[in-house]
Image (tube, rainbow, N blue to C red; front, side, top):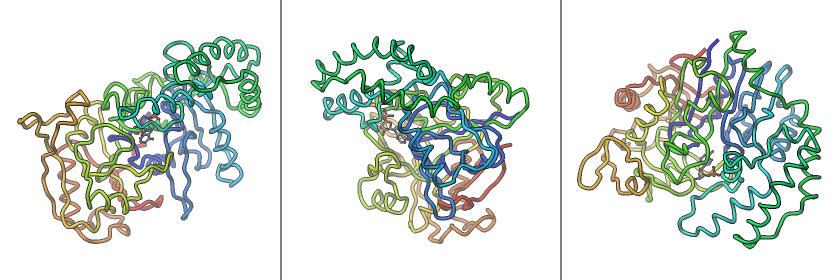
Length: 429
Ligand code: IMP
C-alpha cells in the first residue's frame, strides 16, 4: 500500500486538479480530506473543460473509489448538481464509485448568509472569501453546533438538530447582520429532498479506508486550496478555515498518519492569490497582466481575476517544511514562454534586514520586499515537449535552481493544460 498526499504549495489554484487526475490513473482510491466547494479543480480532457468543486478529481477514471472524507464541509445541493452533471455527460466511468463520510459537516443556508454578510460588514478588512459558507460551517463544527451528513439520513434526528441550531442562528442573522430570518420548514424540506439521493453513498468512510489499507491499495489524498491558506500555517487571518497542510490528510479522512508514505507539493512556475492578504511578489503592472492573460488566471469557483506575480521560493520553502514535501510538481511552466526575463524571489528585505523565511504575522509579511534573482527567459513554446532533454537550457536552469534552492526534486513539469502535456520524471505509486 502506498498513501500519497498531494497538496498545494502556494495560495491554491496551483493546478492540482490536473495533477491528481494524472496520478489517479495508478491510484485505487482518491480521497478529499478538507475544504469544500470553495475549491475548483480544473481538468481538461480532449478539449473539454471539467471543473470539480467537491467531487475528487479521480472520478473521471475507470474502477476507482472516490471518497469525500470527514474533514470536508459538504454542501449537498452543490454536490448533487455536480454529480448529476457528471452522470448526464457520461463522465463517471464504469466501476467507479463515490462515498461520502457520514461525519462530514453540512454546509447549511445560514452558513452562506453569515459568510456573505460578515464580509459585507467587514468592509476593507474583509478576507475575500468565496462566499460559500465554508468558514461558518467549520466554526459550527468546532463549536459542536454542526449538523453532519449522517444526520440527514435520520429525518427525526435532522429535525431535532436543525431546531436546536436554527433558533440561535436566526437570532444571530437578524440581530447582528439585520438579515431576514430563515424558515425552518423550508430548510427541512430542502435538505430532506437531498437525503434519498445521498443515502446510498453515505457511510463511515474510515471503515472503508482501513479495509483498503489492509488490502494494500494505492490511496491518493487530494488537497484543496494551498499551504499558505492553512488556518494554522498560512497568512492568518487571510486564510481558509481548514488545515490545508498534508498532515490533515490523516485526521480529515481517519487514516493513521503512518500509512502515508509520500507528500507531493504542487506549485505554479509563478505565483497567484485570490482574495485579500499579503503577497510579497505580487506584480501590479504589465507582468501581472501578462501572467493573468497567458495563465488564464480567473477563479474556477468565483470567476474573480487572480492576483499574479513571480514565484516566491521563500514561501515555497515554508511549504516544504510545513508539509514535509518530498517532491514537487511545477505547473504552467509554458505560461512563461514569451518572457525575456524571469524573476525568482530568494529572500525578503524586512525592516532593513535580509531574511530567508516568511514572518508569521500577516502585517509583517506585508512589509516584506522581495529580493530577486533574475533568469533569462527561453522564448520558445514548451507545450510539445515531453522529454526533459528537449527543454531549452534556460528552462532547465530555471527548474534546477528551484530544485536546489528548495532541496526538493521536481517529479513533473506541466507544460500545458491538457491531460498529457507533462514532462514526467517519476511516478508515485
Ligand atoms: P473561504 O475558503 O471561502 O473561506 O475563503 C478564504 C480565503 O481562501 C479567500 O482568500 C479565498 O479566496 C481563498 N480560497 C478558498 N478556496 C480557494 C481555492 O480553492 N483556491 C484559491 N483560493 C481559495
